[in-house]
Image (cartoon, rainbow, N blue to C red; front, side, top):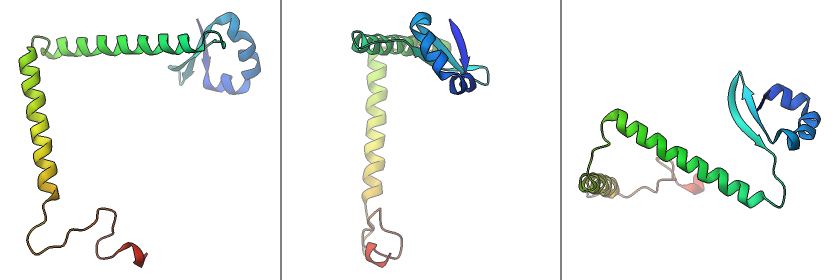
Length: 123
């Protein structure tokens, strides 16, 4: 697999576009680190290529979550414990959202987009 710097991509783009069908893919690097993958596709395989790429990313994301869970020791948490945690977090979010909406007695609610001490017509 060919590695190409961002600088080379800019300065030699015609050559790289010409070589891409034979290379099939190139790794684009910035400061020596991979930042993008340039892949040859055509109209006949465009949708399939994107779907395959997205599936591969999803599989990698799940694998990363599983590794992180094992590393943190949370891989043995039961479904019931997970559901209880989700329920607790949702309840807390609803409580916070409700408490932010309350306006103390005697005060007028301020529209969030309005600047303090003025209205939209004074801008």
